[in-house]
Length: 36
Image 1: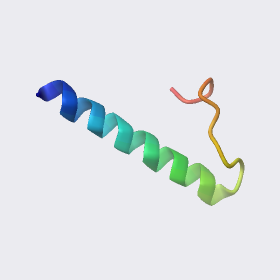
Image 2: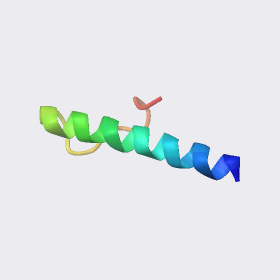
Image 3: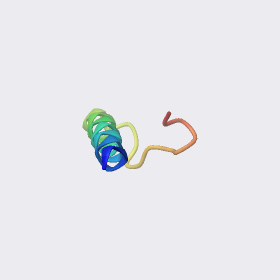
Image 4: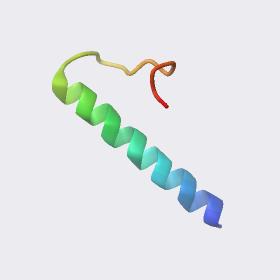
C-alpha cells in the first residue's frame, strides 16, 4: 500500500499549496494548468 500513502502525501501537498494561494487572496481556485 505504498502507492496509497504516496497519493495521500501528494494530496496533502496540493492542499497546502491551495491554502497558501487562498491566503494570498489571489484566486479562489488554482488553475490545474499552473499546478505541477
